Length: 370
Image 1: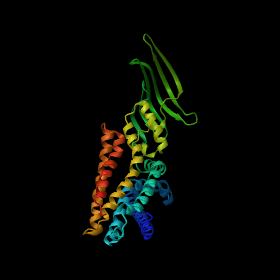
Image 2 (image 1 turned 90 degrees about the vertical axis):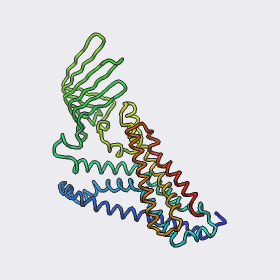
Image 3 (image 1 turned 180 degrees about the vertical axis):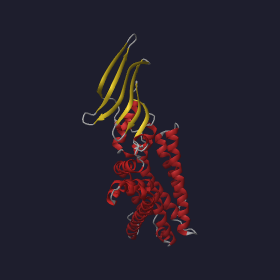
Image 4 (image 1 turned 90 degrees about the horizontal axis):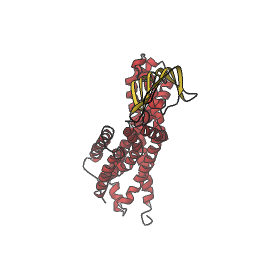
């Protein structure tokens, strides 16, 4: 680096500044457009809530905006790189840099520094900010948008909930409300040596936050051994089981609302219970590390593509970039489906798009103008 022209440091700052300003401008512009469209679609819903504009912004859009921005963060990174790099190529700035004796690898340095910064920013967001934003958005949506006046038809009310509490126990619930943390039609069964050992039924139940226990009302317990049966009837029963209200939510968005630390604990809990949704949870966990890495991969692809001066300028580069972006999103969705609905490894489901497009990035880099 010491034998490079002193102007290269100025060019580094120029490229890095262009990269970051273009990215944040695109992200800001897109966010404004999405918010305006969302407001126009939900005006009637918002008016029914009787909330002020500030309350709607604080309780809904402070969750909605980070959620949407995180989903499309890699896409706008890619488009930003292609856009300003193709402009540099069109002005012959890239040719001038490479003709001065600067290698293409050295030319990539400010791009990769910017990509690394944005990748770290997205990774930190996925660990802490985005889950909290998802929770804010989901709470508002469940309470005001998709929650009808009838409890039985509301999105917070779950019916026919069945799951494995541990290796030998099973739980069934007729109906459960995730907001009040109460339900009805509860049963708990334990098996030993493939035979029913214990059965407990309760007319209704609720979670006691102060004691961290479940309270059951109108309880009937049946104890079985090889030759006899014992029945115990009680008006109420307090008990701790290996499941808590968060385990009964049965919500596809639940995994998106947990911090990474909470998600790791929840995954371990679901594994112990033998739950069926472990693959979906693992895909979410691995994606929180894999998606930020895609920022670096897409940055390398974007620079390698757009640094070549072609007929059509930015338009041609953007068209190719959009095609690659769509292909990346398609690969990501297919991998998730195969992992959650099939036997595909959750780790590979999260990282396969990065592996495939990493190889594509290396190929395009090798063919880039030197």
